[in-house]
Image (cartoon, rainbow, N blue to C red; front, top):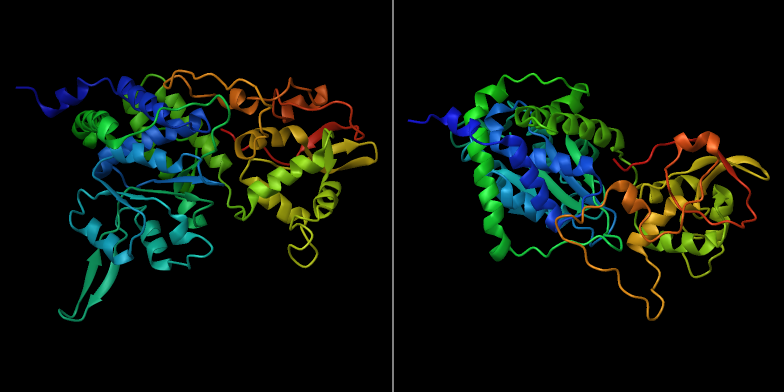
Length: 430
């Protein structure tokens, strides 16, 4: 008779995770390889919840609609252990859903989470507290039952994923692998997902993940993987790195790289309200400049009479607010040397990818459409995506190229002479 461990050992974990990754990228374009790695390992980790002391959250966020966040959540639902999908939920309903089987809790999947935690949705402190407490085992909610005159302990420990526009509460993102989705650029193609047609394939992967991991619960419970992170970030990523170590192959290294990249990229910046309008107006006012000082960019934006930038706040759009609005698009200011001296400013090339994705210019009449590419191989690396549909790169000053994004486009012939002398931030792309 074949025991459970033999059944688990019969599954090639690395190959199985490769299959999960290939399936996800058939339907969704992820912003980076690290993001894809995190999603695959998080899905796998839902099948080994009894082994974990911490249940990492998965936050799928985007600055605008139509960035694929709900489609990604669909694929996560199709392969996760005991998925429980909702677009809204009361704290009591979530408590009871977990408490029915605390030793085998469902995987909570919350779509449209911005309607729960967004700026117009109220605080929802009870639900936020539940999701925070449920990150760590042994953190029950206490409720007094007047009928029995006793204190009831309600379990909270469960895996949870949230998808929505903008940032989730900072305390939730601090316990999560945060995936920053982006709108697909020209040339990035995916297959349509249909539950009736494609669901069975995802369910088969769900069963394979369970077959592989169920026999290894004790091994995973006792695992002490070498962690590239510390404190809460290490608690969050330990289950996913333990899964990667069990799988072997490329996954141990990829998992640690993803942990460092996505943790470094986590930011709790202010949520944008009219980001696409700002992007389009920035393209208008940049004209043919390679770069603009922040103050000059602000002056030009405020001069657009049909735009709101002159009336936002007491004195109009400020440099700080501009930076906050652009941050979700991974656009940050640099220290740049202009003819008038050194100043904070923005490179035109740093906007190119966001312009292509969120407010592309209409194609000239008669221009051929971008040809289709095979769905499974359409995953575009960050370097390829950053230059899709752009002109040939105009490098920044050679002495400081190591501090800048590579192979990005610029435009020659500008009244602003510049060279990079440093950077106050790093790119958000993993």
